[in-house]
Amino acid sequence: MMERVIAILPELNQAFLETLLMVSIALAVAILIGLPFGILLFVTDRGLFLENVLVKRVAGLIINLIRSVPFVILLVFLLPFTQFLLNTTIGPLAASVSLSVAAIPFYARIVESSARDIDKGVIEAAIAVGASPWMIIKSIILPEVKPGLITGLTITAISLIGYSAMAGTIGGGGIGDLAIRYGYYRYDNTIMFTTVIVLIVLVQVVQYLGDLVARVVSKR
Amino acid sequence: MIKLENITKKYTSKGKQIIGVDDVTLSVEAGEVFGIVGYSGAGKSTLLRCINLLEKPSSGKVFVDGVNLHELSPKNLRKARQSIGMIFQGFHLVSSKTVFENVAFALRAAGADKKRIKQRVEELLALVGLEDRRDQYPAQLSGGQKQRVSIARALANQPKILLCDEATSALDPGTTKSILSLLKKINRELGLTIVVITHEMEVVKEICSRCAVMQDGKVVEQGSTYDIFSDPANPLTVSFIQTVLNFDLPEELLGEINGKLVRLQFKGSIAAEAVVSDMLQAFPIRGNILHGKVEYIQSKPLGIFVMELNGNEAEVNKAIAYLRDKVSKVEVFDDGTRNRHLA
Image (cartoon, rainbow over all chains, first blue to last red):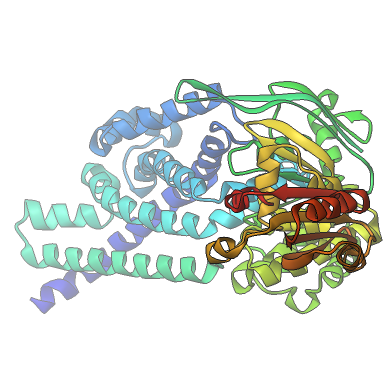
């Protein structure tokens, strides 16, 4: 049994790196686009300083549209887009396109809901000292919501690890792909178990790191 | 300094229209400490928040330092707000920022540079007595210290006005006293106009030169704090004053009273004891002081004594007439059960 694992090690190693790559790209996109989107949803809400019903509704609608499509379907649905963007639909880079699209609304909603937990009075106090909307976002909302952003990023990362396995099945590579190829198509239970253990360890490490950083950052 | 003209604020809550502030007209002079008193839900907080337009009135005008705030562009309104400091019951400090950064934020909002910020924040922390806390986070501070930080933040841009939204209501009596004396000091030394809203008459007595009493969104009475305390007209005002000047007598004692019960009020510098002893020497009656107190309102004394007068009825009446002539207010209660109306 050990020989089987050792024999597969190089492939396992590569699959692991591919998973990391896919998830990292999607996380980066989530931060770049999902975070501002989430803040936009928050500050345009009723009673807030950039209240705007139209923007809030449209942004909310886009997010709900993406979120209502199950990931496997989104994966297939986005194939033409991926093809257009990268000229291929195979490999971890191609898979990270659909992962990113799924990650944006997911993270945006988490950002929005953790921003809602900010004491409204703190924002009001900032308005009362004459701060501009941009300053309030940059110097009040973002620092106040930081622990929530990190916890949210942890949740997003773990969901993405799960999604990446699905992406693997249609040629995205990564650990999910390995598990399907050996464990499902070839009935190789050893490899199956090995991938499961790798995933369990990965999720645990991500969760642990996320909690640690969130705790260090929190000043409450 | 502040002029509110016919301010009305209406809300719709669950389909029903609620009037928060009902046609209030008020003015606050430069350099005074003005109090707005009322029970919760009276609309005083809403009214206060109209002064810096945190709350937009449904109708009416707000003038601060002669400027109609409604006519300002968003940018100029932000500028105007920098000259109106505000502190809150819940302090509203940014939990992820240190004391220094919390105060610095207000200065950055006004576009001050790094060097200026550092110098000004240190000045402010010295003013509120928190120099040694500059690198601590709000969670590490007591309530009184948090309020001091928020005062420093409110004063950062050298405002002309300070609005206090129940600033001491979450603090214990000792801390309340120290925050009030800080506010007094700010008013005196920096010449700041201060508007305080509170449900504690003690606060008004301590720092306000004038005050207004609010009920159901309306101002029911306003005037100098001393006049409000010595001659309250509205029943609500009377009940507020009772919280500070309470002259209820114990039931058992009332049962033993067989003479006339009088309540004397001395204003200003009239020496109460001298009047009472002159009266007792001039008339062949016995007097018995049951309750008495001299309160200092804005450092002007207001004395109130409750006495029982015994003796020949005609002489007692003459003595009362004598008192009416000498003191500012005499109330006679033939029936001891009227005790609860005493104050």
